[in-house]
Image 1 (cartoon, one colour):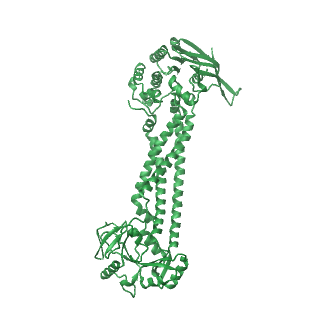
Image 2 (spheres, chains in turn orange, red):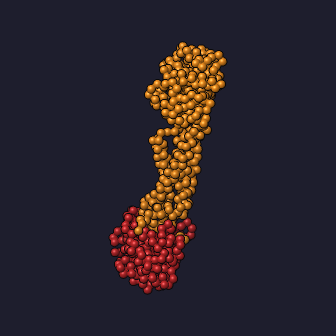
Image 3 (cartoon, helix red, strand yellow):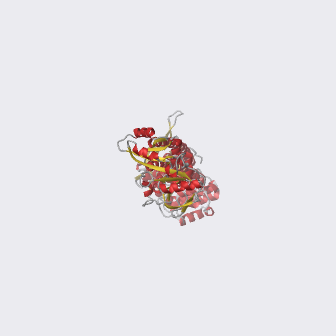
Length: 401
Length: 221
């Protein structure tokens, strides 16, 4: 004889009602989990971008015009190929208030073997760099040799493979951790390598040179760290006045813009979650309210047979908790399936840095979503349980006898 | 075993009418002893079911007390009273009293397992056999007729073996043959030492009774 559990029997033998409750609670869990993960990923992306940028000011050629080009490069991996005379680096270093300055050269591939799309090649000076090197050091604990590259996490190649660009083979020696920004699709190498690649591009008829310079005399961007105690705004103004045909951009301003966009998205997500919750809670209360009438007689029988009010409430709450738990698991699973395979799409659509939280954090969010959903289900169920446990069995069973 | 009511009454307040309350049961004292079958008859609305519910611990009397072997039912908290009802008082109510999501067999075993007891499967099977519903073991209540549901409720109470059985119109939906089967089963329970109260307006029941009481306008005569 199998054990009779009225709770399980009620759930399995009323599939319509059970499914409705599971779906409703799944909807709640989905909204909480996916909303939390998206907002958290955006925040993490912003933090990562701040960490990775590591500079107070970026000097770019005037042709890069606005910070939009640089922002797009950093956030979305949009190819940026703008150049200025390398002498700008010295002028920057001479400027009062500048502690460190490090140049980078950008080069776009026509089509790399590894990738179906163009990739951004970034050449940097390992000896002077304070922007990329600390980050690369996490994956590679030696200096980059010539014709060696380090690739962003979204570049589809592995360490040890050859990366072919403009008919030159570069060896992939490390793959970087995710940043959630456009930097994840970039390829990093030292200045010698990038100049060799510039030369190779030249041989292919693709020129990256500025009007009056040659390959070794160009840089794309100069990253500046100001001296402690110096006013970055003042240094920025000095740079704009001192370096010809270049524009100095404060990274703080760029970050503020990104943070503002992120705040807007966070608010929208919060409003959506709140709307979903209000709607779903109202529906839950209506469903439970209907259940009160539907189950009055059945629960009167349980009271008649000796079930106490507390047991009756416990039984209803158990049913609700089981449904909510099943729904919450479905919702969280659905959220994971809808979000994690499509992080790139989300990042592209939102045009904001997007970095998925670590697995441990995701599990915490999942536990949070499940807990909140089960609690909400139980709270809605408590009202029903309280009403049903007060049913007068004698009168109820006589009604419609 | 003894179920004793001392001057219990029940008043219902009403908004309309000459008086602002109606006396469904006037003060009544009654004793149901183990080994006896008492039949309570009376017209509809005479207060029989209200009295039965008060005796079962389901309806708090307006005045008076109900004792089961010296225990004042209404002095107990809900938990204790519910447990006591589960163990010692079997109620066969009017109308449908099945849990729709359980099979007939599971419904019959339900009182015995509510507090974690071992299902009395053998007893359940023999009462189902005796009451002619053994073929409905795996059926659901929605598939049963009124008479079958009534016999299921009786089998459920008899299987639980309570000390007191309170049956409200137990033969209401039954034909003559099944009426006889049910009343015989209740008589057997009384002979086995239970205190049985049958509320009925059918004269057939009186033939099985050790004592017949008549209720009229809330008063036992």
